[in-house]
Length: 338
Ligand code: SAH
Image 1 (cartoon, rainbow, N blue to C red):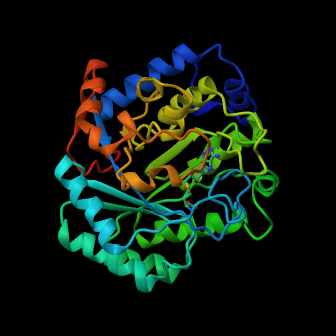
Image 2 (image 1 turned 135 degrees about the vertical axis):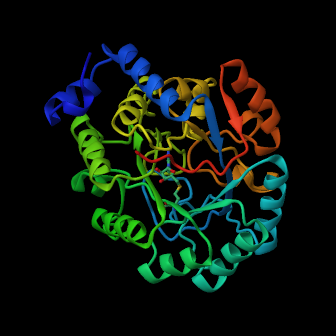
Image 3 (image 1 turned 90 degrees about the vertical axis):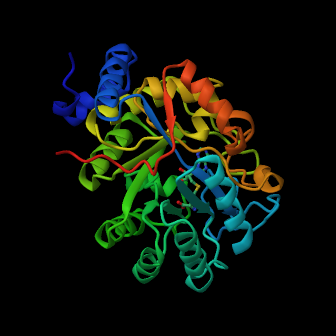
């Protein structure tokens, strides 16, 4: 049996680069996930509340340089309506995700968080709105946000510079993540699998970075090209490599909340079930208003109907039940090592 925890960087890179141990990794990841989280799946209602973005990440369809993107932002009332709908469906975590939209200054965003907090005292509020000042993170936390998702995208400086324009810096991302931790957020980070110029060595750095940060949530999903970005003719991330990394992460972070992401479900029809088999324990169905769902287009063919749609939670529940999983109505807080 491979002791993933004890591998040095070179050995870990070799493990990432071969499919030879996938079955062993899968079994171990699944056993750990079962031991700590049973057969439960936590669900989060994902509200994509703005696709305006001041950043220009080369991989992302809502980058400011994409003038073909049809832009939208939801009002406070529209966001609240999504929460009401989600609450009635049984969601107890709402994830507010968006581009880095200057319109949503603290003056606008803090009251949104405060109203959700007041209206739904028993839900967890997760934010995923990119890099902000320490002061801003503090205000949002005080208003009632509990968790924050900010993928580091890649922990290798050179690789980071190939994915982002020079105004964006890995050091800033890392500083943000450390501040979020310090403030007391439950923090999530992560990366795309198969992003252009990624190597087994950069992936080792990603894993080492996560081991230092010790986030409670880890989000990974395959890179998928978007037709209106500079990476429009790059290859998509590999399904099996994504699953292998899910398993490795579960083994190294037994207590982490790890979603089977929308990108994984976009790459493979049974991506969610496969993700669960390799150690994932979270799903994030789309709770955004139907009319704008196709506009939050990070990559081509992003799924948002059927099992990916919050309204279809009952269907998702029965499909997951067939695979032996139980979707629960719960905040789904991380369990901690005792
Ligand atoms: N503005 C927020 C939310 C970004 S979108 C922030 O900066 O955190 C959420 C995640 O989608 C990103 O962190 C990125 O890892 C992923 N993503 C963006 N473009 C993608 C693509 N083409 N393929 C797969 N995932 C992508």
